[in-house]
Length: 248
Image (cartoon, rainbow, N blue to C red; front, top):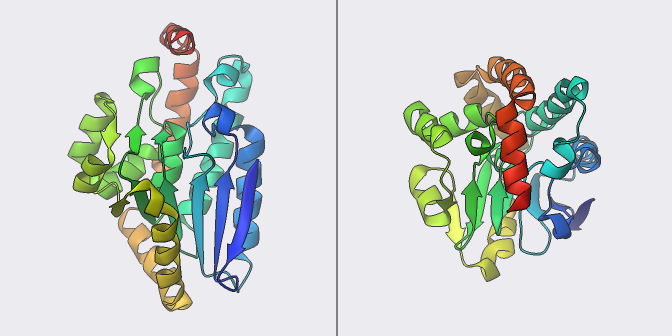
C-alpha cells in the first residue's frame, strides 16, 4: 500500500510505497492510491511540499514483472495510461515533490523518482533502467524526464545501454540533487521539503509551469511511449526477457 505521514505542523507530507517483500514494486492498487493521495495533498493548503520514499530501505522496483507477464494484451494500453496519469500528476504538481531514494529506483520506479522536482539519494543507492534488456522501451515518461535532467544525447545513450547508475554517478550526470549516507536520507529529504515549503507557493507553482513550458514535448513523448510499449509487450523478446529475469 501507499502510506502517508504528516510532519512539522503539516507543512510537508511524506508518502511511503510499502510493499517491501517485492522491493516496493508498483501494482495497479498502489498506483491508484498514490494518485488519490497526491490529489488530496494538492488540494490541502496546509501542505507545502511532498516527499515520496519507499519502505525498508528500498525506493521502488518499478512494475511487478510477474504480474505484467500475465497481463492480457488488450489491457496493456489501459495500464500504461494509468501510469501516465501518475507521472503527469507529479510533473505538473502545483507543489514541490521530493524523491528520497534508498536501495534502488528501478524501471518504472526510476520514472517515478525522475518525475519529482528534487531527488535525494543514499550514497549506496542506484538507478536501474533494464527496459532494453527485457524487450521494452523506457516508460513512466523516462524519455522526457531523463532528457530534461541530463540532455538528449546522454539520455539516449543511457536508454540504449542500461547499466546501473550509482548515486555518485547520478549526481555527476544531474539525475540527483543531493547524495548523503543512508542514515541521513530522511533528514535531508525533510529539510529540503521544509526549505521549499518556506518559498512563495504562488511563485513556486508558476516557476514549475514556466520550466515545463520549455520542455513541452511531454504529451507527445507519453503518446509515443504508449504505442511503442504496447507493441513491445506482444513481442517474443519481452516474453524471453521476463522469463530470464524471473528465473534469475
